[in-house]
Length: 359
Ligand code: SF4
Image 1 (cartoon, rainbow, N blue to C red):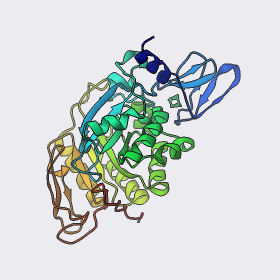
Image 2 (image 1 turned 45 degrees about the horizontal axis):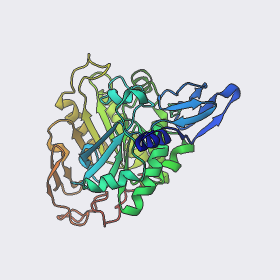
Image 3 (image 1 turned 90 degrees about the horizontal axis):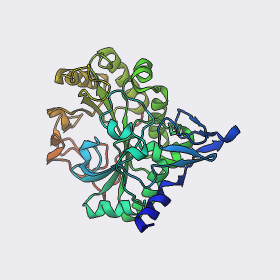
Image 4 (image 1 turned 180 degrees about the horizontal axis):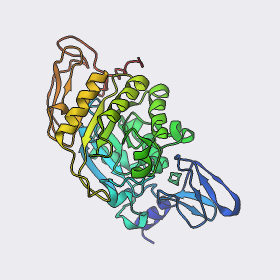
């Protein structure tokens, strides 16, 4: 057997955390709120956590299906190391069943259906540095389901000065939450809608666990986080729903959590809905600003609302064209006109300016 095959076999059979044995060789995975009960020889809903002879293994460990360098604004993160490159990676599988998934080719695949290559956790930061990146993103599919790999990559990345980012659907249990997020520097959480109907029918999950994760991030960690709401015509773009979503953020997370309204394009099982009209995003942004949120962005369309404005004096602070920074007027994280401290992590040497407390 070649060295590559030995490495692949070693990494592919990594025993999972967050499980317990049950009767008749079944195992209970409690990494995410699905709480799969998995029979021997079978996998969980996410495909990559499998029961082999009464023990749970994670096939995602050391087997990325996608490796790429992206601008950090693409995650999207607008208040975290703007203008930098981020080494981005994902595996097969997902714990949600979103009909509109734009990465369905990997998220709806089993491990043996994707082109993966063996990459040990210690290799990932070295690859990131070689490609001129300041941070590593766990993204493309849901990184919670390969949390063991995420943790070991973070442990290797931190001593080398690299930051780590979760791009997540927020579907994780409290049992696993701190074990993962205590290693993480920033996150973008998809809040896909603000109705249980949408979560139940379109993502095959539930809303409340995602709201729990957002509360834990705010109240129990120092992770910098932003929120994305992908607006799909007729499914989650009702102005009343947007208003409720914004009010919830304001009440539970405060006004300074950046919120990204992004445009949907027909994909996967949701081909019968049109692309989101720009006016829908403009309307949602107006609602969010009226509700009292300070940093509201539009994404997946060309828009002036990709830029950061001072909520106090209105000054254009960080100008963006798509994912490119064209001007950055911030002075050590402050507005140069009125000196307001703008929450975020604006440089690698500057410590985080915290989001303000809940009102
Ligand atoms: S992580 Fe996967 S196996 Fe575990 S409960 Fe969630 S969907 Fe099921």
